[in-house]
Amino acid sequence: MWLWISLVLVLQYSKTVLSDSNYLIGMGSYDITGPAADVNMMGYANTEQIASGIHFRLRARSFIVAEPQGKRVVFVNLDACMASQLVTIKVLERLKARYGNLYTEQNVAISGIHTHAGPGGYLQYVVYIVTSLGFVRQSFDALVDGIEKSIVQAHENLQPGSIFVNKGELLDAGVNRSPSAYLNNPASERSKYTYNVDKEMTLLKFVDDQWGPVGSFNWFATHGTSMSRTNSLISGDNKGAAARFMEDWFEQNSAKSDELGTDEIPRRVSSIISSIHNNHHELLELASSFQSSPGKPATRVSSAARRVRSALRQADKPGFVSAFCQTNCGDVSPNVLGAFCIDTGVPCDFNHSTCGGKNELCYGRGPGYPDEFESTRIIGERQFNKAVDLFNTASEQLKGKVDYCHSYVDFSQLEVTIPKEGGASEVVKTCPAAMGFAFAAGTTDGPGAFDFKQGDDKGNPFWRLVRNLLKTPDKKQVECHSPKPILLDTGEMKQPYDWADWNHLTRGFL
Image (cartoon, rainbow, N blue to C red):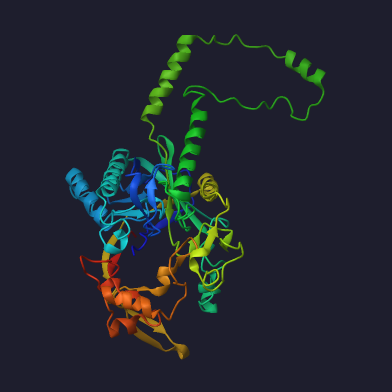
């Protein structure tokens, strides 16, 4: 599974708001919707979830931050389930053809919002494309083209500007979908946190020296599963909706301010007449005592000239770009009402998320239940409202050097030190990736099939027999993953090609 790519742009902070810019900043946005019919969707691994239309279109949003004559970084946020190494490789090839070695795997990060309602088939490993029946060229090309064009836009929009950061808690946009599993953590670990999921939103605000605010992106943890596994419409889910809300909000507010024109003084509330006056006659007498100035006639010529100047100015102004990025969403569900049995309406079994022993009947409910489109809107709106609050109050300016690092790590060969009672410790070693029986049970956001259950640490003889037809894990692999029983030994399955590349990946910016 891809590690979420983190981005830290600066080394020290400043509380000053009114100061000279210290970066070049550029934003870009481009369509990546891809095929909207007859393609399996990525996320739920449901072979029956085939796209048949569009809820709203998907976009790639790119942000470039550079030091003048220094280093630069690119962060791309996709309205897609996840990024793909194959997509990244192709995008970098195109950027190299355009810009030489300016943008490489060292300083370009591509991340997905984890929507489960986008077209699949664009990844290169069997586990990710088995339900789409293989590689889908249209999905792949739409992503690569859109990412490239959004980065080109951001590059061409580079202008001096500043960046501000703000943080705050958003309490009603995500809940733990496996609270019983969380309670298995030691009390000493749980005591470090106020909630059983991360509730913090962190926002970066980008301010162009000439145009003012031109973009923002934020990190907040909640799954892109407001749209269910039965949905067949392409959608950016709650985070894609939040991004559209914020971009529309900014453009609408910007348009209102521009109606005044670039050479007019905004109307102000008079301080001559007190707002507490109630005597109508007094106000009339006071008003009649003021002499009006000759003024200036408003002609059609001057009005047209002002409109032309305003239109020309707007044509040069970069479009506002806002991204709602995914972070440590793990077991964070947007279905905040909880999980219920669809046959009885009672809450699901707390420990195994089942209904009468069956996981297929247990589903989480969003705040707009039973309307998942309404749930998508509400969770998106809650993120949008928090982002606007952080955006409007951001005052901590980021300063320092832009830097980055990149590395590949073999996760099948890591040595890990585990603390033991009495202060001692033990060094253990990781092993190749494998999926357990509980994996096949899915989650309350999208239940699996058959008789699999969450939290299963025993396994099943029948499914072991089926597993062995594909790949029988050896004794070393079984012991390494114990007590988790192995259903699919994906890290060691290589036919017809690699099933997963979870053994060799991590990268980030610092």
